[in-house]
Image: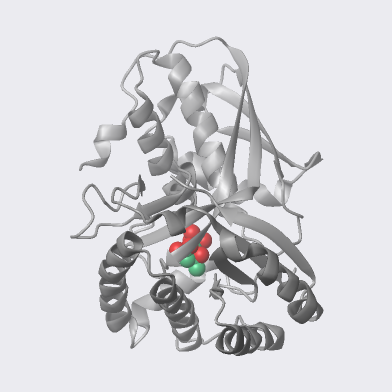
Length: 354
Ligand code: PMV
């Protein structure tokens, strides 16, 4: 598909002042996106799939007011306080998307945003914040084009969110979401995410995600830098092949409902992501000693109890523990008794279903 499909073609006419409000979930990838084409337009080098997460989301209020001068004008407030430090990223985002949303230049914007998860929790908020902002912008576009269809609305929101932060394009939808072209997934493409289109066994419709906050400081390695380093990572080519195969494996696991296979796959994906981070030049270590303590405790517990609890990681030290809702009582009890001492905070979230 060509990107000009998303151009805003109508002549500008809108009520001069208004407010739109949207919320977007955070997401955790099962098959990770790590590595993109070197062209600033966030085209991934492998397809990825994530679960959007309940309870952890961003709410954005976008206030717009008509102005005379045609330029991009934005102020950002986070949890009630003006954040000039967020401006460069937001302005770059507005600049990139103004190509597809020419009306942006006719307004002064005030962005007011907050997260439902604690600010310094180490949970990446760029996905949920960029996606809620993209949805707000699409709400304005919807005011300009009354006939705009729901599926175009969501697709373009995902397309715009991607230009803010790659993984943000998956946060537009609840449940399992795929981004990046994969030969076995119909409709998958590099420009926007789509809801996972195939059969999913009922065991995967109610999964808990308990997030163990091991490090609540902002990440040292920014994903933008990490993605770039994949262009020279000697193992990158194998990694992309492996991600591709893992996606095929996951499709059949999701259908059959094999939770052990699922768990083994997501742990392998998480450790592969960190292996890539550790083997880049310059190399990084995102895990902390307590990340490893948690992983070892999970493996020991699983061996002894035969419970279905598996971990995944993003590009940081924190651990997501995924398990079926049926085992929630006993696993949560074990988390608080055996893992609490390794964590700064525990956030009880869950995977949304499609
Ligand atoms: O969307 P970005 O550029 O912040 O990259 C996200 C990368 C991972 O969270 C590590 C993996 C993923 O697919 O979400």
